[in-house]
Image (cartoon, rainbow, N blue to C red):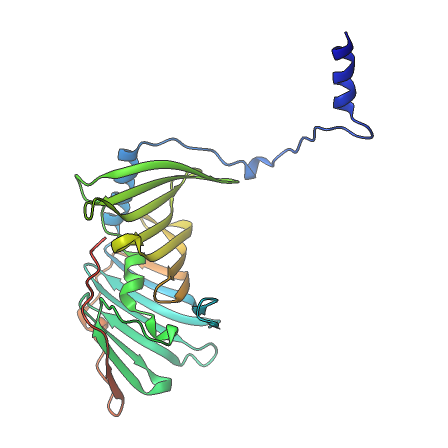
Amino acid sequence: MVLLTVVPLLAAGCGGAVKKTTRVPAAEVRPSLEATADQLVEQYNQQARAVRSLNAGVELNPVAGSTYTGVIEDYHDVRGFILAQRPASIRMIGQAPVVAKNIFDMVSDGETFRIFIPSKNKFVVGPTEMERPSTKPIENLRPQHLLDALFWKELPAGRMVLIEEFDAAPLRYYILTLVREANGGEIARKVWFDRADLNIARVQIYGARGRLLADIRYADWQPAGEVRYPRHVWLTRPHDDYQLEVRITKLTLNEDIAAERFRLEQPPGTELVRVGEESKEPKP
């Protein structure tokens, strides 16, 4: 009888109720969808196969440097254009606001990148896979890095893929981990799925010894014809010491793009800079 008396007193508390109920608006209630590893692999691969070319107007926000290097350079209001076509062609042009003057023009064909920087009168050429990053982080921005974010590689059949759940309140995720069978097993790629809609929210790409090469986040998935595609992409390259935020303002998918639109020749009178060497990083 004593316990029955004490419990109501504790519930009432001394000066207020212990329990507080908050009603979440219906529009903000997030479901927690279920899926198997096989279903998620197939969804990822379908999305990878669905996009073969991209023509986009974009707003860019490159951030170079970090607290680790002691210098952070943040570039605002860069407008631009991105052309990309499988298997490995991409061109990206960044323009200064108002005057629409090119800040950079860069292309890659999967083997060689070419970058024209008008303000420095430099034309930079090098292999797409590099081991020696520049001491100036903004110069590490490479067109093929963005290509990896825009066009995904399919998860190969027969490779080991692990699945796990991850909660980061209020969000819940599935994470697929692709394992590279080298050195006793290494992580090659992680793919995060938002369990509210099973859209892909994040892709992480790893090199040898667990080295995080790229961390890419996706948001604002919208239809583009018969395909859904994210309109907001964040690309982080930790070892290249830069980040690139891309907001897609205009998008056309899967139209043929003429080969000459991916050609970038050295302008007369510019300084030619050859950089880099072939990378030994294993393919994710």
